[in-house]
Image 1: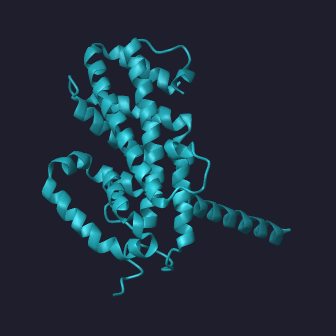
Image 2: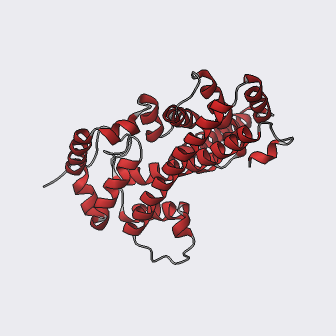
Image 3: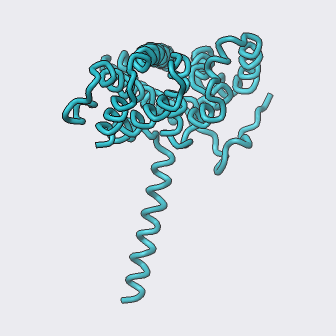
Length: 182
Length: 93
């Protein structure tokens, strides 16, 4: 009886460990489609915006939206950690051309062999993609694909949440049922 | 010319990823892009998937920029904190 219980516990631990591994290895897409994540994001974003001074500039709204999005991701992905460590990195990229050029060259040198070996035709497009996703200029091609998948799902949730928030603010009064958010 | 197969960033096994695994990742990415989801053929090239992925991310970025502008205007017009508090309450319901 005692040995049976021990075996059962061991099985449970193994299951739990395998589940964690599974969760880590696969894309985190499912959570971005849940209403709970969207509500959580909307609430955090509105709190963040209220703390800002009146009037809130559009750029500050954008920075808050991205920072809250990264916080909602809980640092599980490279792009979210990049945003949290440098919230305005996107705008920096746009205005500092020298930095951009240097990074591009650096990217080319480090990752060319792997990309060329695997999929030579997509080298240029992979570089463009790496610039669009925060923190992904210098990652390997497989890692870039994984980050892209999660980033797209997160952006889609962000758009849904911000649209719902704007509609609420525009009407001035919240709808009777929270189902209107979906 | 030989490049390092395992990098300090990568932890665990240093086995090189195979072409099949990359194909699988590209296929998963393809499912996320509306432009490519409409096509039911498996013959979309990896370059096409990456191109449409870049376009889609740019579109999403533009949408977030537009929504940021809109929210900024709406917040400026919302004078009282009570309206925002009501909205927060409804969000937390």
